[in-house]
Picture 1 (cartoon, rainbow, N blue to C red):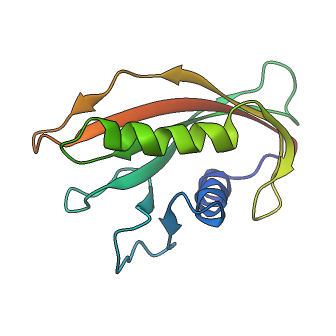
Picture 2: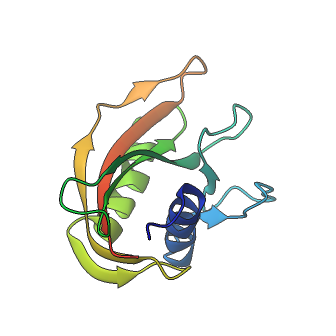
Length: 140
């Protein structure tokens, strides 16, 4: 059986936390800003530099037991366009072309890779964002 949405995204948040790339609190309460906080879904407007994780696809073209899960990892930076790119590069190093590993809650990842790197953009507060999309082939 495939893990539910909340299990995958929270497992990924914990994986980034354990690697020191971000900090994850399942209640979304953060007292410091480094490493950047990790949010499930949308990054709150009041947050500064932060990471948001959202699952947006579930492809079962091979079989139902090893689905491909599509996940966007969005990094909000500051007014320096390189800030979110540096964090996104750390995430890329951790996740791209990796195989046969387990996430925090027991989800087995057969393979993971970045399949899309969107161009950087800025929000209305002139903070730079970098959004990368990853495919995780799971074998729960």
